Image (cartoon, rainbow, N blue to C red; front, side, top):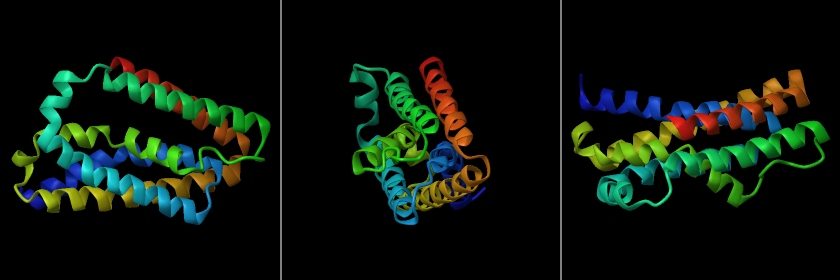
Length: 178
């Protein structure tokens, strides 16, 4: 199998969590501008995280004080809790539609790209090509997930947001024990 095809397949697999969380996050009815912004942020994280992992991955995993799974679980728990509150209260406020919220989202779905970067030289020696493919694929998957989540929200209303919040909390618990 060619290294380009392998890179594309890995990019798609790394983007699945971004897609699934964007699908959940999209139930909060994010507007088009913020969908694009979040997709770009996720893409940028998926560009830089493998490169960081390539150079600093072994140091980070050796000396990191907090388990990365716990960090992701905390982030998902906060976002999921806010989604449940938003679903119960109604739509008068937007969930984490801020740069900080988007950065947390981008970071949490890009952790796997950081660890993938540790073995990046085995995948493909053209690191910028790999990072670019990861960024484009994850950005597109994020945007598509947000769009599809909006459609589900229109059909199912606040229930979609509440269910999405519950799913995020369950995923957070999963990350602690995986």
